[in-house]
Length: 408
Image 1: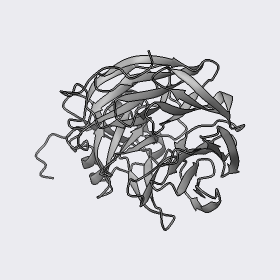
Image 2: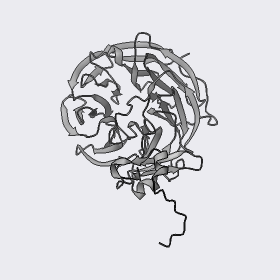
Image 3: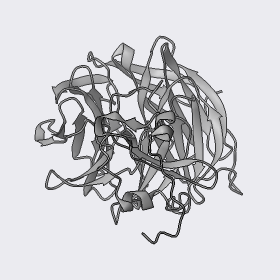
Image 4: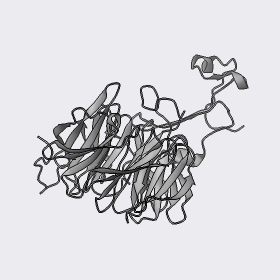
């Protein structure tokens, strides 16, 4: 055939049998596998299929060879929570490097960063044993400055800072409650019961007057008056209401119903349902772009991010994460979604140029360019990343005070 390279033959299938990749359903051939390994020995891409005719596209393989750290999106620090490691990775976005790895409590799920960018607070959800603490991190000095004990309130999950820069609003799933915590003192100042099962994430209106909380177990969203501390209403949305986003103008709230494969859009003022949108493949998180034109939704089953037009209330594209699961054992979702990287957490930079997506079963964070709508890079935090936070400050920046502002 005129080939200019050595060919190896295996007429008795001896080699593929010893490797355990004999495809007995389709004859004496191996399962086709494609593996890309970088110069450090790290597997960048892996694909395998029982059907020998199904091979990854060249474009998909080439995407795994793109520079992984050179297009992280500009200045500042990305905080990534690693559930399996009980750590927080601080990633410098100018270089794409992890500059610090800090301990948290068990099972950290979500993180919020103060308006000044100095303080990050992580919710320690726990594992087999319910967590009940928050970890306070000083970003410029890259150190843990305190742990806030929520006492009898367990499974803290969703978290957001209030505009005063001193308080955070936190959900406590086991207690069907939403808490307000004063971070500098480490004191809880208010608890409001939703009366709904698995109160999960939380968003707050731009004026700080209302909080919206999706409840996975009840398929609803709770509306809370933050000024009076009263529950206003529980609104049915759909089975498995989990993710939530509020548009920058505060007019609309988007709730992902993961079991129903739908999105419910509410009028934030009247609390009326504006739209019910089909959203296939286990929609799990939602984030609105700063210009208010789009909402991004991560889909755990299909391993991609759907982009919705806010005005038209319809899906306009999907962006593949171009990754596969690194392994499923011991992870929150296990093998439920097969080889999907299981994208969950989404964070959009304030300038609207980049979105970061935590792929919890692939141990990677994908970087999406929001102009080309393509994956342009990969960041490498710890194992099972999920919650994401952004600070405009960088670790160890000259002239930035490192005095702690968290709880003692």
